[in-house]
Image (cartoon, rainbow, N blue to C red; front, side):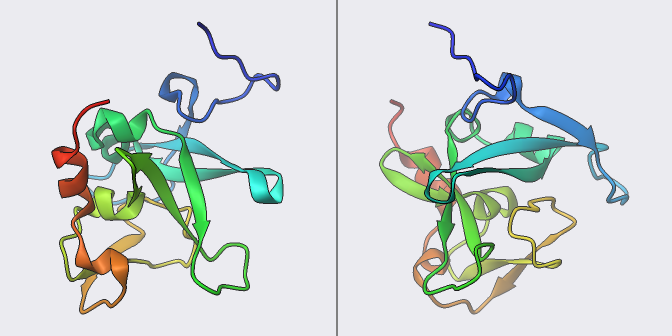
Length: 149
């Protein structure tokens, strides 16, 4: 069965249709290209794009790369861009920036430029001492432990 997008653009959950672009963050050891991962935000009737370095995207487990990514509004946020990017894997929503940075329990990921859709490693930093549900788990550990579907 082939999946097509009526608009002819990238299809969430189908990495072979994702667009790439040059990476404007220049740092030694950073991918020269980024992958633009489409995210359908059905509640607000829009398609968003997460920026992920090609090397980081390729290093994600297949079940995460092939999942449709979603945005989840953070807590009681009033701003539409106070979101986190997640993917459903084996019945759990795992947080993509935590996977990219391999955040351990007790660590959280900060976006330096404030854009939660910019998931390039040059924009992400690990911090310790976080509070809240996501800082207490190891998302990559969840993905690795979960049985394949």
